[in-house]
Length: 336
Image 1: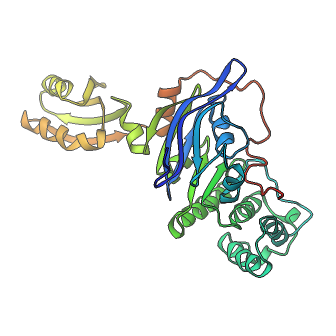
Image 2 (image 1 turned 90 degrees about the horizontal axis):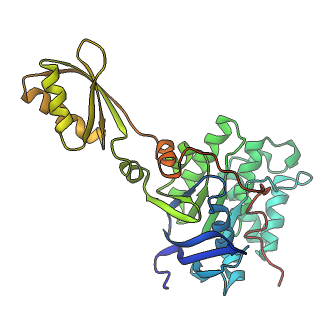
Image 3 (image 1 turned 120 degrees about the vertical axis):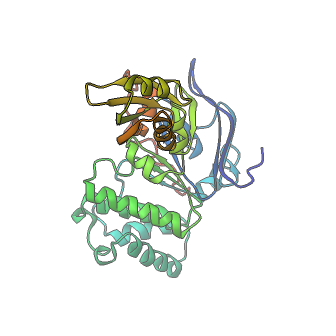
């Protein structure tokens, strides 16, 4: 298995715990420089998958290459090339922001002068230059999260793993983290693997998304591609004039349109569409072709949450036990 241009590459990756298979033959390729999202219900296997990719769990079978190195054969090298931002806040409250990042950089063997140069640049990037020498105990949750992203970047990793980076943050802090990740994407070639339960976050930040369930990847693509997989999910509301029954029959028979219905009086109709945005011009044309007129038209697009529910089902499935954070310890430098 050759990594090529992939930052993360897996082949038939499996993890079993006794008779239970948590990850079941996952094949995945994450391109260098992309933001890749992992979505899945509780107990889906995404936790175990990421723990293998960050060298915290050895695979039962199959292979995984991260940043050009096999996670089972060269785990120390992988750890040197990845950054990990766990869900749990792990910065030391009794140290300053600067000291938190400085100690982390020292663990990685970065020389003092270079380390301090990087810290200054990173604190500026995350908007903490003026608070860098204040105790972390005085930081807000959003400030701590931004500090921990800076800390995870001090050794210039090739791949950054983020676990629920905005959970529990207020809307302003959440947006600040989004802006920071967008800046990272634009200004560097770093690859970001993002695990989140916020659908708007995944849609806003991710180039591609994998939906994981029961240990398998059940859907993969860009947000638009995932939405297009759910047929007839867009809802188009329109108000028309003309022969209503004929218009309904015409729309109902058109490719990509389904279930045309009349909604009360005054020529109000609804129709389901596979890709409503692209079909609207044709709807107008078809109605006019039979001497009708579209007075108004409104598209209600499928959301990423709708896609998620479509593929994983509506029943809630909880993990047998909840971990504090599945990435605590991942990417930490190892003592030689």
